[in-house]
Image 1: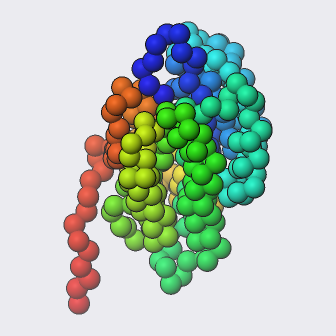
Image 2 (image 1 turned 90 degrees about the vertical axis):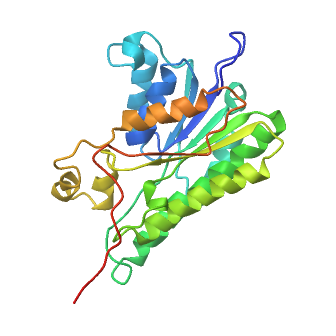
Amino acid sequence: MTHAAQTDPPPVVFITGASAGFGAAIARRFAGLGARLILAARRYERLEALAAELSGGGAGSPAGGRARAAAIHLVRLDVRDRGAVDRAVAELPPELSDVSVLVNNAGGAIGLSPAHEADPDDWEQMVDTNVKGLLHCTRAILPGMVARDRGHIINIGSVAAETPYPGSNVYGACKAFVAQLSLNLRADLLGSRVRVTDIEPGLAETEFSLVRFKGDRDRAAAVYEGVKPLSAEDVAEAVVWCATLPEHVNVNRLELMPVMQAFAGFAVKRD
């Protein structure tokens, strides 16, 4: 998505994990710009509620009802299923098949145990979603962007890609993969006008911690106690800013954290 002439059709924005959190906020922000949206998630009923909001132009819709999505297409999708991803992209309505922006948002952390105590099933789920799911969606949509010589892949990473912390073992490794893949895609795409951006949020209050702690609301709430974290809307604003820069500008990596979060020093265990 770029600053284009008014005669150009509205951009097509494909968002994974769009049913809540960052994904829903990103959808609202792009809807406010009049984009055409493809919203994908496993929780279809939430997508339906979001679509009703974004197409209604009412008080709860983007920009206070002043703007709404030009079109909305919903996809019940588990990004871990490569066949399902390929079918979803192949079966897009013709008017939405030329995806302008892919936001690889589906992902998340499960558990916060040290590696020697972690559940391997949690590890596998994180790899399947954060790594394989992102690969499936990128591979399905990127060739079309290259053929049109236009498009933008935006990957939602994490500060965990750069800064280790106890219990982040496989989640941090997955997000490091996202960061490195994003840079390698840029290398592969040199000479094309397809852009790639890795956005790395820090502490942000969404369903992230609730999922990480498997529904333990008290433990999830404690993560944000006494601090103002990033909101989903903050991250959505960063996504849209990157996507709407002039088309010759590529933001390779954008890291953002709340003011009250910073980098810790080295941990030293003393006798």
